[in-house]
Length: 115
Image 1: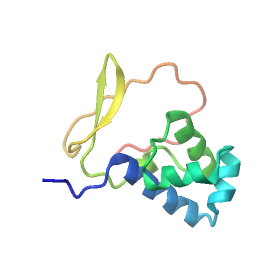
Image 2: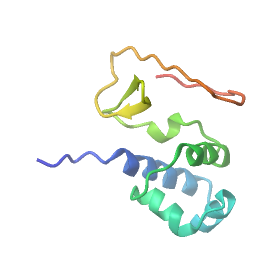
Image 3: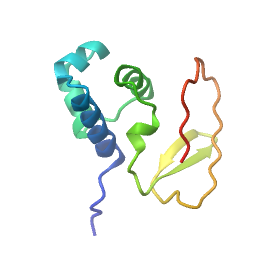
Image 4: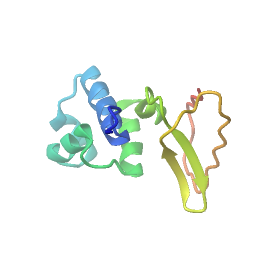
């Protein structure tokens, strides 16, 4: 049986499009500020291409949101920490304790949202 829940990529794409439209930006405007083509931005918004971490970082700066914004509304997800790195996985977070370790992170944290 196929799940009716959107993929993580599709969810992130929906959030991206929603915020772009809230700021009254065209795909062309946002793509130009990210130095990518509007076609590539469209693929991110449709969820057909995965959004690399560096691009997510750029989007947070341009769209004035935290990374949490892109994951808000995901009801079935968890963060897995192992030797291969940190991964957002599919399950429920409600009632679970989550420990996140960050390494090699450079910059200034101005806003943190933990739900």
